[in-house]
View 1: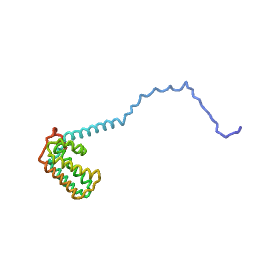
View 2: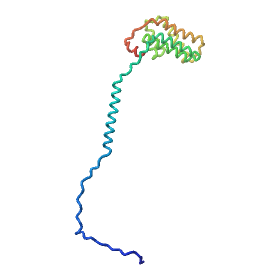
View 3: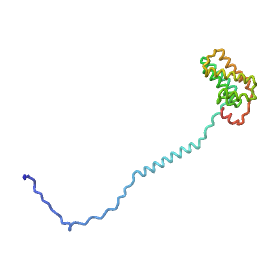
View 4: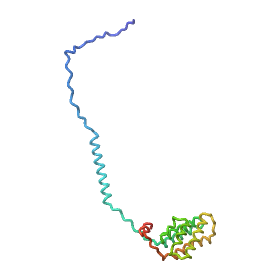
Length: 193
């Protein structure tokens, strides 16, 4: 075994009989919750903001939109037909615009469901209509079929033929502008306008 040069250790033992007894427990310390006042303040602030928002919203009556002047169906149809003339360089778009203008006019003027129907379905419904003359019905059928040929069969009509289509639509509007069919549900017609 090797010898080392360590200082000598001395230990002193205490007599447990002479030691003081264990001290009693101290009462629990009251630690305040520092976040609780902040939480309460935040909730009060949120409630105040909500009440202000609710009060302003309740007080402010919705502003009535100014009533737009009502445009007669024939006037609107003529405007749309006039706008469609600017599309004559593209026969397909022109025929779509003219056809939609006339179909919308017929729906508004006579409560026909023209925009929702195929040409054949619409012509069947039109056949039952007593407010158009047989000649007007034939012209309407010819007009719609000519538009369909351009839209779907890619027929390339001349400018003169396109002007005839526009004239045919305008003539039908002019002839039927004074006629008016009462709808069973007038509020539905007003809602569409």
